[in-house]
Image 1 (tube, helix red, strand yellow):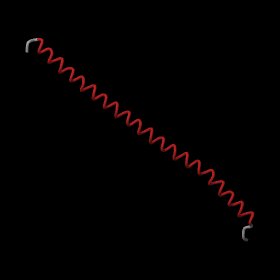
Image 2 (image 1 turned 60 degrees about the vertical axis):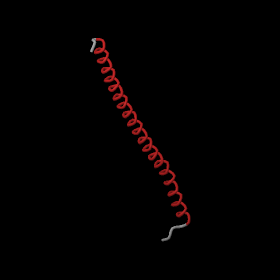
Image 3 (image 1 turned 180 degrees about the vertical axis):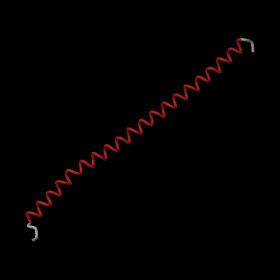
Length: 78
């Protein structure tokens, strides 16, 4: 038996309602994924900067040690 106009309208209404519910859920999921990517990128940059600073401090310490050693040699008449 064919559907009546009321049944077609009800089906269309339900389909639209489901779409209206699913769309914000999908948008929220995409937004959460983007935020997670941004968080991971920021964390990676933070880690890279920390490693860079550590290397700089280490190389600065080596330069200071060389200067100190050179100064000792000069003071000792070398």
